Image 1 (cartoon, rainbow, N blue to C red):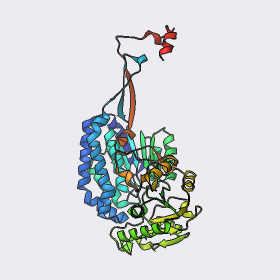
Image 2: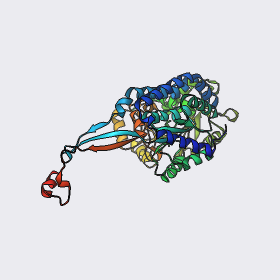
Image 3: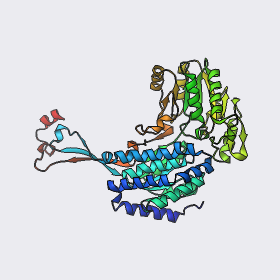
Image 4: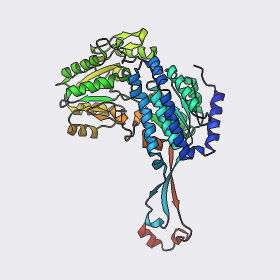
Length: 458
């Protein structure tokens, strides 16, 4: 795929700025019309999207719809339903010392947005962010990942066919194009990727004091306590770890299990993996592949430490690594030093929950946090830890509720989106006080008459 040139990028950005200056994007009818057009385009391209995701990541059409296409369609529907209400100026109380003035918040678009998405959910993570940009009234320049070129090409076709280029555009390329983009001035940068790349984005944004939303990752813990329902826990952990072959930013990265139930739980997780994909997951039409050879090599190195009790099969020619459970893992093993982003589940054991809490809190704040056990114990564990989001007695599902803001904390990101928070992410909440002219409060002027009286009110 050809890389977009610097001249083309600069022309696109200038076109966006000129179009935004016409104020057309601020019109609510314009936004709604384009959200509807966007939805229709996705429905038209549904088969192409599924075929592209199969080619790039070996995702089944069912998984492609559930984890990518449907999420964007639901996001659009939510914005169509609520946009008029969200965009309406919000009246807020006015304190007595400002009367008879009135106060309100008006929501205005930030301007021209840059949205950079990764390869693991290439359609969802680019297009879901775009919904918020359209909803808020911004123009947008989109940058998909080069590691999933087929779906990147389909998205380019969809965008070109659906929107005016001066309103929403898309560019292609690798690191050089990313570097060029980050040298430009935007009004907001929305980036999804690794913490290391997030630091590069934030540093570049600082040159223009550009606000950023960083959706990053990290090692999300999955804790199974002695009180957990093991049948349910095993099934939900197996699903959460193997969806997209574990290439999910909120996948349960490692398992911390109580010693009294460890052996039984691991057998049940393995059984559930086999129930989903059969004895040989490579032959299953539902098990995706690792994105490329570089990722394969990195994951293979993580298999060298610990006791593989299930899986461990590798086919480099097919970019395949089987669902794998690794027991007897130590905190200093390589697999515990970085986000795995693959179908490998390292297991550590605990006797007291305080040990787990201490371990989690001694590392970077995770994007997700999963606890299996009684609700009372869950409340205690949640109160003593932190994460961007999470689930009690489940995995991944918090991302599916558009009433919940999604995002990280600390090393796992900053900013929130989904639903109303997507609208807010691309908006400036502008505070306005309107004061009538028929009355002018004399006490605010020099020489501050009646100051003693005013001091009692303030």
